Length: 414
Ligand code: PLP
Image 1: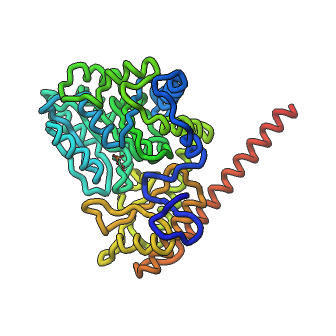
Image 2: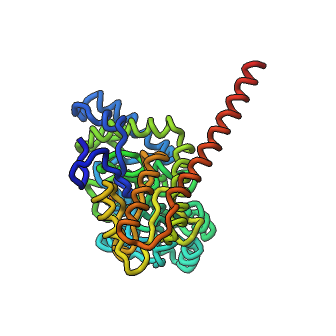
Image 3: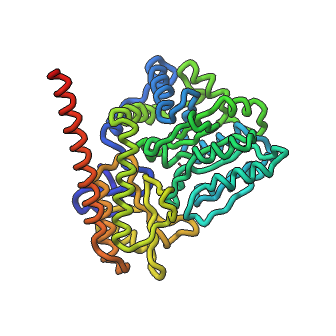
């Protein structure tokens, strides 16, 4: 029985924070099995399935490590496996998650150079290029960026960062946090030449929290041979040696791996490109609603709108946390809070993972009703604007289907 933050009042809780996201019934059923011996043949088969399946989601043929940990663990694993105490790294503070990763790097004894932003835009590849060009001694050992900054709703171009790095011929590693983009936004670990990609289970992969990932390039693997930051639990070499035989060096999160196998199957059944298109459509619908309400998006660069969440500013003098509380209490809808310097100033609408047109419409309706109830100045019509856009998209999709079915029947008849 699902428990929400409110007493039961009929219907279900609408979880529209930008992760963890609702877990589809198919995945819940997959997880709901007896635990098996993690050193036996049934586990070995499961491990082999997920270790090869997850590569298709990262778009890599290189190894992907699965940790029984939240995303923060995989951040640490990326750093401690490849770097040594006192190493300089370049990080871009696109928002709160980039800032937390920076804090971790400092605690680990690294020396991060932090490029600050206004938390309204993404990584400026030109700045990375200039910093690397200025580093003639190649003291910078890694460039670390967040793909989808979950605190602001900004998506940075990893291809642009890679191209900028290539132009400089600087040997720094490229590390990318895809915790809120993996499985919901186009991402290409191999094609974009990323050295370590960090992922998490609880967002685009539609799983509960508890698994996280490192996808590793040959160059990162090479760096791990000489890196001297202390590591034990996070050690890639022991994990990869065990994974080779279908096992883990310590007790894995067996039941989450059942869920992961199902999640990978579901993403491929829908087709990754269709999954990405669905998220882009929902991002656009949400932004049309925000524009009609007359509210301002936190992301101020249309080329960098994240398709997985929309971060919305409330007019000054109003409290976004009060709005969220009103919405939760009255409509049983959870929205994401503003983090750190954005606390009380923004709310975040998550539309990632197991989200369809009607779940998005429920969330937008809850927001529009909440704005009225909380006395936040806005114009009506956001829900109508989103609905009109989704109808347009649905009509286009049906047209495409009927054109392709006519083409198929013509081919069959011929
Ligand atoms: N990075 C990003 C972009 C995130 O969105 C999050 C969590 O929301 C994290 C890192 C931290 O991951 P976790 O909370 O799973 O440790």
